[in-house]
Length: 160
Image (cartoon, rainbow, N blue to C red; front, side, top):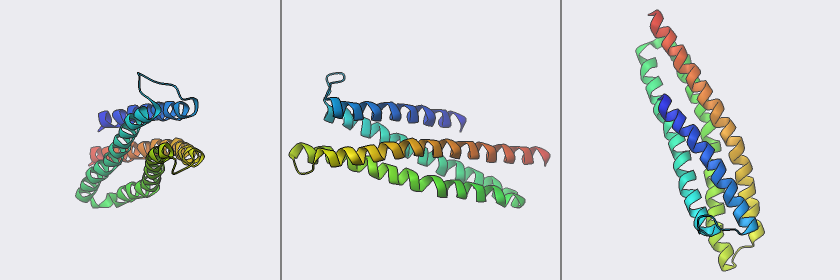
């Protein structure tokens, strides 16, 4: 579980870097590794969606493991309530951000065809990127809470 969390943090870091480069590339129109803005944005969106999905599944999987542990010791129901609270805070932000960034990516094609003004796509991307930075903070707090719950369960298990 710890290794997967580290991988999630690495993916969050690279998502920030890739989204930053993509945003700068759209504004300044430079090439990276012979890739145009549209091509680099495709790589970025695939990695970003993979990362966010991995983080969602981390919390789903760890929540399931904690629930199984809590079911074995009925007096620890409050631990699983903390897990549910963390998910209720985290998942709406994750989902909303995936929608923002996904729409911004889709609009790249609409801008290229002239169907949508570039300013609209830029505004949606900027909102999505700023919200992503907030979401990274929420993810970090979720990881901290998850670790605290696991430590609490481990301490109770040692006592029993």
